Length: 113
Length: 112
Image 1: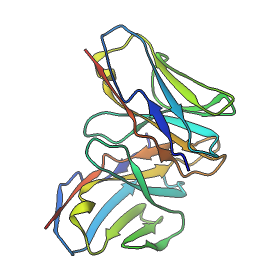
Image 2: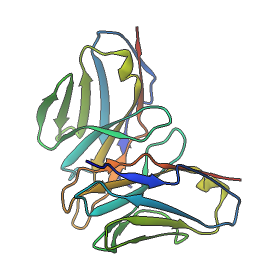
Image 3: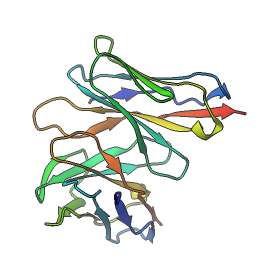
């Protein structure tokens, strides 16, 4: 059973601070990783994808990947109240003929004005 | 650029009934995946359709079936509904072997 683990939170940060969201995964062969944001009652919205070890930046968001440690993180700089949502980590399973994404349960982020 | 669309948005059924959910992929996409998301959980993979064939299936019973049409739209059918089938059903589309999946707004199913 391939698993993706996230702290459920809630994670509370003050407005303007850096929010750090973490994710570990069990499938050592996984090569593709995704972060989605999900507002309450809405569907997941893609924030970033990352495929190589290291950092990938997109605006206020930075994804970090360490395949040796099987660890993915998402940093949100200058957090805004509008960033308050549940953040889902998703990992594409490895293996030939595998196309599914395995999701964590999500971390609920609350940005306090 | 049209995004992923799903219908209906909400649905109420009773135990034992059957339901059909529909999805139209994002323009230019040819692959459709279906997920079930229970309250407080992450989405769980049901199956993926590509070239009108089920390409991969998750750990869901045969009561869950699907179809993809030549225009790449897709249906999810659930037979003999159980209370536990109450969830948000998400359709995600992607293009070919590219892995990035984009989600539609979802269909919220309540089974009474």
